[in-house]
Image 1 (spheres, rainbow over the protein chains, first blue to last red):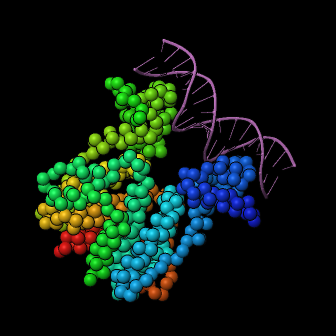
Image 2 (image 1 turned 180 degrees about the horizontal axis):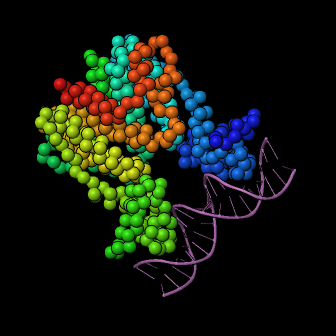
Image 3 (image 1 turned 180 degrees about the vertical axis):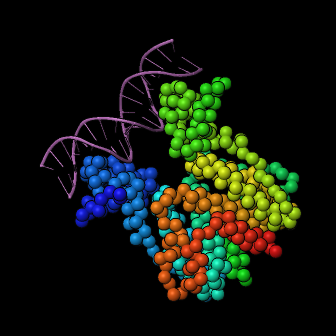
Amino acid sequence: MAGRASGDGVMRQRLVDAGRALVESGGPDALSMRKVAAEVGVAPTAIYWHVGSREELLGAVLDAMIADLPHPVVRGRTPAARIASLARGMRSDALATTHMQQLARHLGRSAELFLPAQIVLARELSAAGLHGTAAADAARAVLFVVGGFVLLEDSYRAAGPGVARNPELWRGVDDPAIDPELRAAMSRPTTPDALFEYTLGRLLASVLGS
Amino acid sequence: MAGRASGDGVMRQRLVDAGRALVESGGPDALSMRKVAAEVGVAPTAIYWHVGSREELLGAVLDAMIADLPHPVVRGRTPAARIASLARGMRSDALATTHMQQLARHLGRSAELFLPAQIVLARELSAAGLHGTAAADAARAVLFVVGGFVLLEDSYRAAGPGVARNPELWRGVDDPAIDPELRAAMSRPTTPDALFEYTLGRLLASVLGS
DNA sequence: ACCTGAACACCGTTCAAGT
DNA sequence: ACCTGAACACCGTTCAAGT
């Protein structure tokens, strides 16, 4: 399985590099075997000798991208501040590498991407005095909120023009049981940053038991 | 634009029905113009007279599926309990219609799917005494947490066998700054249900200012 | 008004054949 | 050991031609 051990693998490396360039500029869908082959100057069918399949090539591309990932950064004094800064960093890293996130999702390997941040988070929670399953619950809650937020944000941003966004939809709502000011507020666009800060702040306040 | 007004549209309906069957059983990727045509007993190119493009056919399929969506259900007495039950319903509805969620995401129309639940949520928050932007922040936080959770859960479940999940990854972690019991807890698999309850409970506790 | 057929420009993958 | 070429089974879409 997995194609071939592939000798020294200089040709394989060229294929992965070409594939990576395609993924980085256009996402996983932009990688076709024929385009990779053309880029490297080889017949499309030659790829299969080195790499097994398109899916395996995508896997090798992801490996290469993961290796170049920056380490998570933590700043601040209080545990809440440090964890919040970590979460902010996770979000901005993810937003800066959306094609990579798409690729990881496609391969079902998103968990790997978040592992380094998870480890740092666990360290911070330990330092904050949380232990055992309580700490694990807290860690997973933070991870899911950040991860979910990024996923949602990504799919919202991917929505092209001509698609009804939430504020437009709300403008058509007319329900006497809903506070008019609330309706008005929902009809205004939000900045994702503010929403992220709000949600994260609420969660941390509760999770860290302040 | 958008193809054609298309007369009475009985043929169009047959195409949408066939497309819907494909999407429901295999997700958006499973819908090909040629398969739809074969199902209806017509040349692939005939579709374009009625429907414009594959993307528009997918849009029509989504419209049909949205029309059959169940209404959100709310149970319980306290505001926290009622909102929690709504959130649980949103999650289970979403998990029961993953192919539809995928389609909505593909078309950038996820917001539409959540609108009915949003309206009910707004009603409950109003009844709970929240108003204006504070209520809007709370609503959006709940929506993003639930929506993000469902998205993440979906992409985790889509990860086939042979992919390293979080517990396996954690078994390889060895960091003295991390509480050993925390590490052990992270190495055990979680049930998504418990994590959802925990996260939701934490968020609602903070958002409803209890 | 509605549908077909041929055609174009794409895909991933297999496999015999070459060097 | 490594690569090519032909081939197969797919795609979405356009467009002239039929009825």
